[in-house]
Image 1 (tube, rainbow, N blue to C red):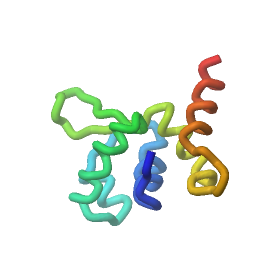
Image 2 (cartoon, rainbow, N blue to C red; image 1 turned 30 degrees about the vertical axis):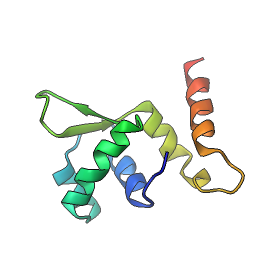
Image 3 (cartoon, rainbow, N blue to C red; image 1 turned 90 degrees about the vertical axis):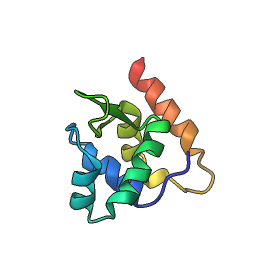
Length: 98
């Protein structure tokens, strides 16, 4: 996965409180451009780090996934030389399901 640093981690941090949120709110909280946040959220969803939730299908609400929580926890390992970040995330996820 290719994450935009620091924005993607900031989005995941903001969602890691377990509450749902929208791009509008996240852009305000993070002091980032709303359209940029709107482009990053679907990418994070494609990576399985966040998911779009209801109640309405197009409500624009997102919440962090377990994989997203792992990415936040391993943030300091991202872009570390010699570390396969994707493999590390998958390994940590597998440990949690055992």
